[in-house]
Length: 499
Ligand code: PAF
Image 1 (spheres, rainbow, N blue to C red):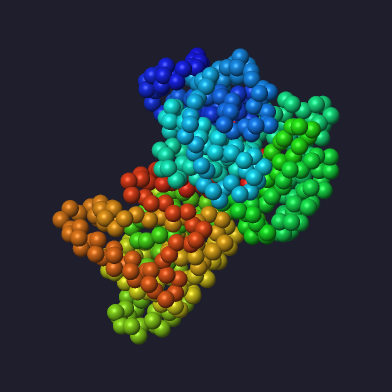
Image 2: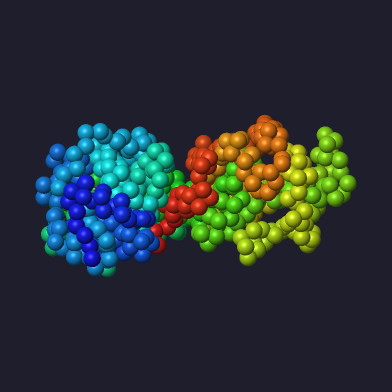
């Protein structure tokens, strides 16, 4: 049974009786694209809720708010077929407060052509989230700018919900499903697939090696001669900043007019499988998070810290005195001479081998922890291991964690995460990991501070956040939540599977 609520108070009272909720906000006139979101919300949550509200705040004065299609009866039928538990369809949602999207996300694409639109979207979506209190919310990739803005909103305001972004659903001729397709005359409908066709031409040209954004856009425009382009832009998929050349990935997004009807669409341009760089200080939870992210996304995991540990282990075994500042050259020679290997184990951990000998446990001792940052500061060691890391990640498809992956090893990584936590939190975690209660927390904190200082002041590749890395402060966040955030970010950058 699908319940219909039009009054916020009655809806909220019912909501309080529910547990975990998946939520699909809509403006009604539901189509196959919405249906995919509704079905996914139902499949992934005990309770699935949809809202239907044609939000006046996101329409400009001369836009189509009044004539926007309204079809509550049909929409309820569709929700019922998708197993939606409740539809919240308020008659009005008065709000005087306005949410301002992150300014850098409203410089490109639709925003300059629709002033105030995304502020209106963000305001009403935040209001709906407050009323619905979902654990998960579902949106379509078709409005790529809306997706980027809402992701940022969730992160900036630390909202306790996860976004799931679903691929654009298309008609058989490629036209993206949209409530506004109903406005098209038969003649316009026949031309409308040119928009997606144009984007696909750019995808093909990109696959053939073209990297200049201007050339890709020109090709696309030429492929759709009968539509009136409002814009076509190649932007970074997360920051939405314009790109002149596509190094590794981009969102190519456009809006066209057919008569008065405005349609939007986008595709991802991706040169290779993405590489996820996770950097951060010791004890921030990088390895656990990186392993689980790799597992969730079906990517390889590469533990760069383990390679430095393995060299520290090999150097100590060779009898080197690592406290001797003159030992650098000998350590460098060891790094160049040994054969390192890492292999995934069934429990998601990594087995590490030096010249065929397994050192997985041996490199995790406090002794090695003590020396690893000394070894990692040796230029010759960094050169050898850095080259090995680059070779391991060259073709993408890897989650690589360390301290300089996003800054020095793969500055062009598609997704860069800087995972950090306060010293107090990291010390608590270390204490928990060691499973001992009679250790001195103050001493652990001091050791962490010392390690941070060494890592961030070393001459080569010091620990610092890459300017384009997304910082996640993990104090108070569960591992599940951190993994969820990174998986979400990754999914926003992968190629639309419907291509
Ligand atoms: O994508 C939409 O349909 C709308 O922008 C939304 C998210 C329902 C807010 O009104």
